Image (cartoon, rainbow, N blue to C red; front, side, top):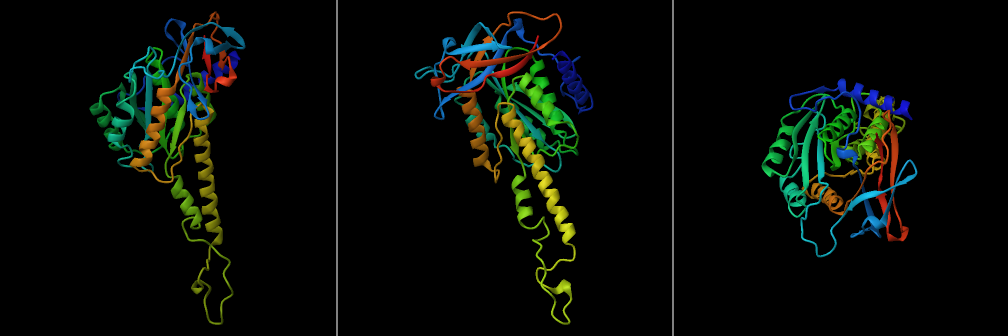
Amino acid sequence: MKATVRLLAGLVLASALAFGQDTDAPVEDSGFVIRTESNLVVVPLHVYQKRQSVNGLGKESFELFEDGVKQDIAFVEGPAVEGAPEGTARSVPTEIIFLIDFSLSVMMRNLLDFTSIRTTLLEGLRKDVMISVYGFADSLKRFTGPTRDFAKLKRAIELTYESEALGSRVYEAIIQTARDASNRGGNVSRMMLVFSDGFSTTGLSPDIVVQVANALAIPIYPVILGHNELTERYNQGGGGGAWRQPRQPTPGQRRSQIPGGSRNPAGLLRRQSNIRDRESRQAIFADVGPRTGGQSFDPEVLNNLVIRKILGSLADLAETEYIVGYYPSSVDEELTAHQVQVRLVDEEAGKLYGGQRTIVH
């Protein structure tokens, strides 16, 4: 296990050092170590009963295990019960991270509707819910740290539109953003919304992203950009029109004059194979969502209505989230990875989602 931790640390640090950074970008530390204040560890989760959030659960409703050994729960915070004041803050705040791919092949002007951000994520949610904005292509930029200042958020997103560049280091960007957010310290529940087509220009394995995100307890929510265009191109024959076996020419007629004829079916098949490969890469990117406790969004079209629904989903997650906190009973002489799992005492209370993470102490 210790060798695995060191290997993961080395891979993450190596990928980070290879990832170009600009002014106000995340600053590197000496390695991959999770630090919590006063050794407190927080574990986010959700509880649903027939697709409805179960509210009002307390410490007595949960059990927490570290490496299979039951631990004492320090506190539980969750969605407010009916009648509680709207927007009530809690001791563990929530940070919603926007990570936007601004590579030339992806950037969509007016991708995010500012009004939707304000009405969906800032108005009506708890006052401790903050938003941060990062962007990436070949390098990563932090445009604003956690804030509820609408003018600052609006300007941060505008800056992503002005930062178009080549390259798309998708998985390095997710890792670096997660580490940068975690390095700010404090006990914070975080979720990351990633806007990208998922076509990384490097060979970093998404498995490393999953390990880091799970260790830092940051679920990833990929928003797949451009999938519908790939589907349309494939249905249209790889961008060159669907190829059909040409009928035999009539006397005096050249093959190029035959409707539906093609002189290069092999080229068309290569284009279709390339499209299938790109769809496979997008599927791998989308799978990062459920593998980290999040989910993926693959809209057929991307407009203000769709963006509002996606942001609304995140708002619901922030509002219905539980946080279970505990203090590890022992600290190892050497840094060691430990598996943490939260369970419901009464399984009939609902179905628990999340509630697992890897910590190092």
